Amino acid sequence: MAYWLFKSEPDTWSWEQQVAKGEVGEEWNGVRNYQARNNMRAMKLGDRGFFYHSNIGKAVVGVVEVCALSHPDSTTEDPRWDCVDIKAVEPFKRPVTLDEIKADPRLTDMVLVKNSRLSVQPVTEEEWGIIRALGGL
DNA sequence: GCCAACGTTGGC
DNA sequence: GCCAACGTTGGC
Image 1: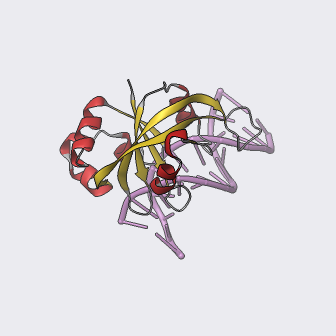
Image 2: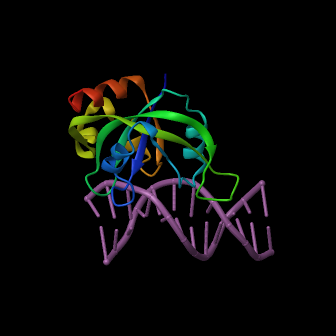
Image 3: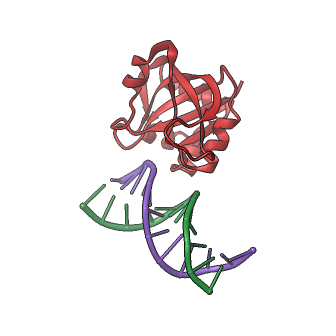
């Protein structure tokens, strides 16, 4: 299984909205970046991801699961853009802020730190374990 | 609200 | 195929 990180501005799409979608999940649409799209194309059913709030909060707030493989993004006619569906799995007991991640010497190589603009990122198994633990899971 | 970093676009 | 111009993202 692979691990990922999904970034969203809570004003646009928040963890609370994701949770409200329940088991059905929701398209992670609107991505217009090749790297992010390629990451989604590489995802498999059951892959896990962090849900990160950018701009407001700037913290990892929960765990999601890929529940539909990459398919055309319903918000565009442009055939270049695909996306997966994700569903909320469990909330963090406490959010793990960007400040904490930056301050942790074990996490300095995270994509979130090195290329903060990439909206769908790979996460290593090691990083997954560290941040999950910081979040109280 | 600013601005640096980055990705994309389009003219040549 | 290069690169300047432009738009967007996201931390601060």
